[in-house]
Length: 220
Picture 1 (cartoon, rainbow, N blue to C red):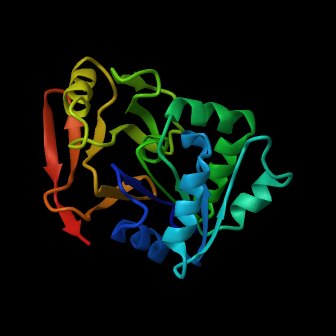
Picture 2 (tube, rainbow, N blue to C red):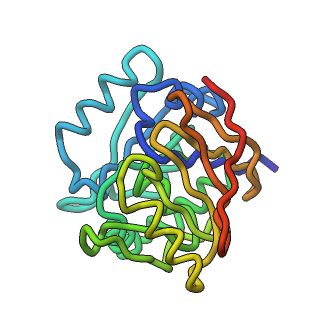
Picture 3 (cartoon, one colour):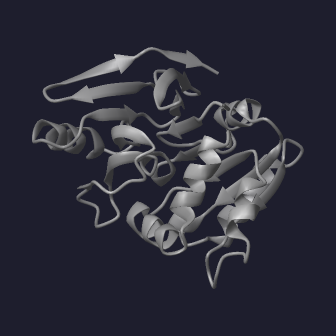
């Protein structure tokens, strides 16, 4: 059985050493970019191609006006899938309409490396802290559930993230992991293998009611 791998980044995945870390985990060099969360912004798509030039064979997936006829076959032809940041709730709704949530699970179970920042971090967990519904930040409990518990990106990058996540967890929200910008959590078969960092002092945290525990990060 292939290892099921997810690299969940708090922020700043593309263009950093974390990007190459993901590519090195993959069995090949075909990489797919899924920009659903940022409304399929063409500038971000172009940036993905620029970041991966000379490093991987890049392609992207759009759902507007409709996805490819063979969405499953297209998706499973890649070795790594990068999910963009943006509106997590909207992204998940679009994916579920087209059955892409189930295709992603199949890809994960087949050994395709899944990765992303912000919305691309939250989506793999059962729950997460999101600004999908407004800047006040809310708990969302209908993630894909590939990983147990909850997630919070941008832990040191946005002033409201840490206190809001701590408040939610203290009041019954599923405990989980937070990641600073420039930090990522590498999960293998749903278990945390290691924390990576590309920015000085950036790390991840295990967050439970009443406490948060910094996790040792390996600098890339």
